Length: 358
Ligand code: F6R
Image (cartoon, rainbow, N blue to C red; front, side):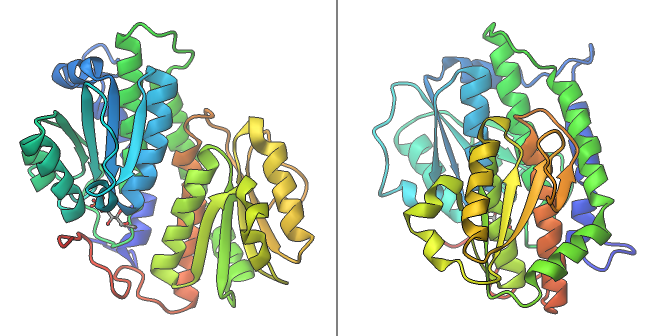
């Protein structure tokens, strides 16, 4: 029930700190150490390559999952949009493990791939889902649950954060078991991220003001970032599109000059995410390029990387976990932009919560 909340989406965004804490708990063993099911660990160990298959927001989480499995666990990963996989099937490695990421566990596009790789090709499959007993969970060999609680609003928020957190846990535990040197205590870093998310959901007034300042009369908007911030930019753009109907595009900062910058006009809103130290200067360079062409730039920077004039500073978290946190202001900005435009936030036009047609 949404209780005193005007919308499920707002309630679900507010639940994000507790979702991360719940995941820490759910994936801790009796000694308090992060763990996942032994059979899943074994499947990850056996695999020479992971194929992540997902759609929409879950695909955006998958892009981050790729970075986790490659950087933390040392396992090569490909990420594919489920609806494209059937006709653009890559040449597979010798021992693939397929990972389906799906909040609902019912997405037909993803299920079609699952049936094909399991039944026709006989490869193992793991489903990461919020819904125990869902079709994708039942039909895969293994399941990792998101523990996010029911997500009612059509726009996915807390499930995305849960997907990123569970992917981090799986990659971390796999890396540990493989004997890799891990210079982070993920449990502690996730707890820090949960607190950072709390700080942001407590800044609603500021985020509502940003939505008003940048999006009240906007026809379109751009989200830019580099590295992990790029993936979050794609998710920010999707959130804004689906609930406010403002045309939005998320892309890599470096791609601007290869075409998209032609669209920048006086007052075009550009949201830039700056959480990755090694590319902070480059993305700030991109911001200068769009501002020089009249863009109304809103910089969201992580503490330690902030500069004079940035619109929002988010608390510092581990550089790999920034997507858990940087996405939250973008969700809230989209929410308030949709409210300003009197859109039906929880049930945007033309969309359904689970897409069971291909
Ligand atoms: C966006 C959104 C969709 C879903 C997509 C996949 O907010 O909710 O893009 O992420 O339809 O759905 P699941 O994760 O249920 O497979």
